[in-house]
Image (tube, rainbow, N blue to C red; front, side, top):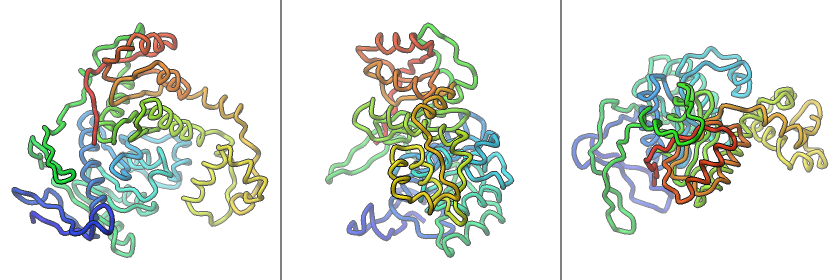
Length: 390
């Protein structure tokens, strides 16, 4: 099949809508559901991301996409007991692929609500059981076990989008799109992100461990499929904060850093010890935790809203306590899709535990950025490669 009609485009008023191939058949098969325009944009971008993560790390990979940018991306490393708890998978048997999706979904659970999932490997039963529990629009993978397919086909009353991608498909070297009736054409970004890109370390600290290199590659591959400007914080094989589509680099760094901080604060004893009311839904727990670690919690206490959410009124998690906990986060990797123009980005990154950085370099203020890294004994590599994605 070389064409598929869609219900509408980005919005209901944008009709007609379709996807098609000028030559050959579509490289995917819709097993179940009726994916829309944005679903397919998320699916095809997400598939490229996880395929490259698998190639770069040798580990199964997953990503959680929303509005053509990843909310999370990860490889299939084992989870600690704490991560199992904050990802709501502490009662589940996990495979490497399931670990990857739990990490990708857990990085920014609020942004991942209603996501489109991409998996690097055949979807197994354990991963399908995780997907079953979450609010999601669909999944793309190179295959599905019989048990996984049975589980996923029952989701959304049989309307869940299940897409099988042809993993051998290679797109044309030239890609095109239209804006305002004008056709744009460019060479496809087939850059191979590997250790060689991290070889030019420009700081006094030249040490990049294998773990640091792995996490920096995860950051850069994630950025390759994130709407620009973008930065990505990574720790232990998973993105923990992604700042996408900001006009200012520092706003990207702050946005992603704030998400990384929330991810870390969710692991604090004050949050782990919260006693939620019986029957509260997973999304409501996520929202409640977000409020609990924000300034809004004082308003919630004043309004008495806490009684609907918690069995016991939680004590205030003070800013001083939060800062003390955040200071325990270390060994975070940071990637940027374009150069850092000022050292203020490094100052902000330091607050979220960043110790290693990869960025293109090339700013007239590179010396200032390097000096700021040296002040904190960070190691920074200049890749020489920009990763804008639009």
